[in-house]
Image: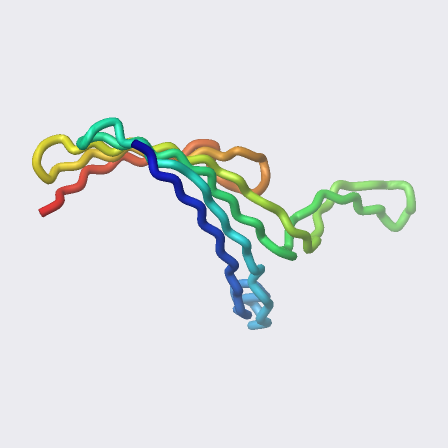
Length: 135
């Protein structure tokens, strides 16, 4: 038995010192985001399920560090530098999880989140193991 899901959202963000300059208290706008997910859950039995999802998040017009070159006053010396440039980018992750009812109300969960593209700063693989008790 399988069930499927699709979700989409838009997140509006406001101004904050954290997005601006903390030193002088200047506020700037946090980037808005478009979020989406799609997946399926499969029931192997009454005691075990497997969930598979794709999770996407697009950051709109957000500051990103870009590699650039600085030219010294002599006009010939070039040095590596960085600058901020506003652009949009999308992170795409995959998630797989298994949930098993061990006995009574005891549940065992094992999940892994993994990146599907090389955009943004995040782990390649994020594991999660959990135990739950339902009463």
